[in-house]
Length: 80
Image 1 (tube, rainbow, N blue to C red):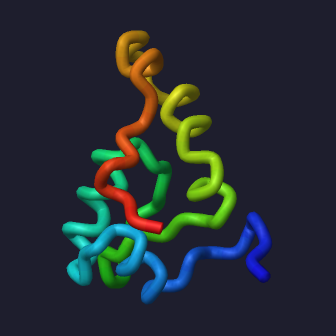
Image 2: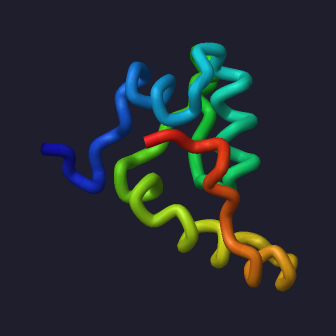
């Protein structure tokens, strides 16, 4: 069972984003409005289960464009 503070493992990020390359994973997550940190050592994205489960919250709080907040995150590129 995953806790909200646990980081999503690399193999799960591949399944979620549908990409193996870290650069493409970051692009998919960014496009979907998911908050993540890019690791300096290998360029892979790091995100917690909390951020994955609460996709809409992070975008609404950080996006200064009100029209983007009304639309919400784009879930089409994420797989479950």
